[in-house]
Length: 115
Length: 118
Image (cartoon, rainbow over all chains, first blue to last red; front, side):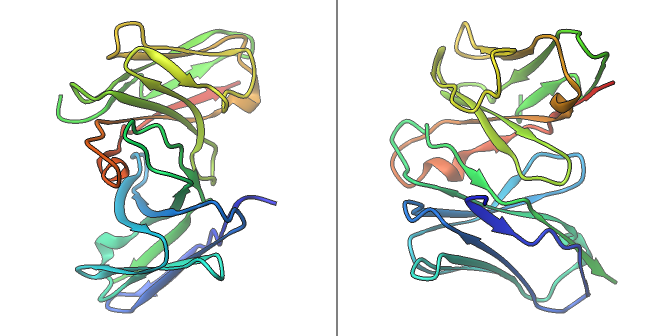
């Protein structure tokens, strides 16, 4: 069983819809939770970053972390065709002064927003 | 440069050949990571450098994989005697951490090298 589980999709929704993406994990030591967006043939780019449990909002994006359930979510409001990409959740056990924390990624969910 | 640059973008190798993949991190970035991303999967950690020191190589799948960063800037990932299971996108990422809590917000990925072993 993988440490991080993510439904690979694909997921297709109409423009303007609310999108919900989720990951579950098994490692209780994970404390830092991230969502990356990856366009085709590009590297991942960081969307949201959350420490421990709680919510974080940035524009149309909201990240939620529930450590008691080992479950994280990303919500996209007013989805746009430009949001079509693969969304990867990622986690790490710690953040250091030296940037040596390695990330554990989910498999990614392929999302298509239909105009 | 403006971002993390990787070359070549695509590499086709015959089984058994050696390959070398190059990463030019963002100038001045101390931390450098290599990740392997198989088709339809998320990236998996391979190795980490802090300047020229390779501090973590726990993710390298076999002794055929070797990485170096001799002057603390450009890094090369070398794969000897390539096998079909080595086919993947190899991603390089760099960061320049300024303190706790800021590190991952400063992690920048390159577009990767897509390696196909025939």
